[in-house]
Length: 106
Image (cartoon, rainbow, N blue to C red; front, side):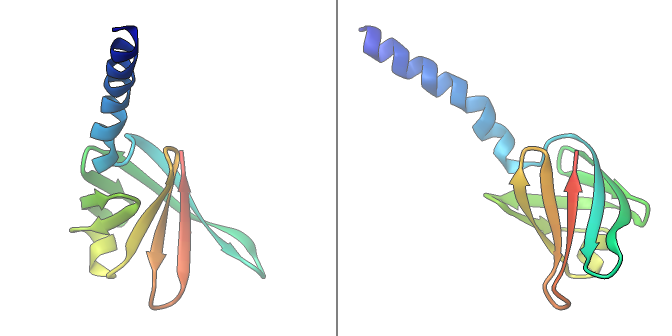
C-alpha cells in the first residue's frame, strides 16, 4: 500500500510539469545573438504569457510540441522562423535559411 501511495504521489507531482510543457514559462526573456566578430548582439526582449508573445516588432501566438516551437502569427511567423526550448529559462529563435540563432533567457 505504501508503494502505491508513493507512486501516486510521484504522478501527482509530475502533472503540473506535464501541463506546462505545452507552453513556454511566463516572463520576460532577454534575447542575444552571438557574432564571432562583434561578440553578443542584443536583439531586445520577448514577453511570453500563455500561448502569446510580444516583442518590439509586434505580437503573435505560438505553439509548442516537445522542444519545438512553432510561431503561428506575428513577426517571428512572418519571417518563417522556428524555435526550440532549451530549458525552463531559455529558448532559441531559429532562422534555418540563414543559420541564425537568437538565444532568449529569463
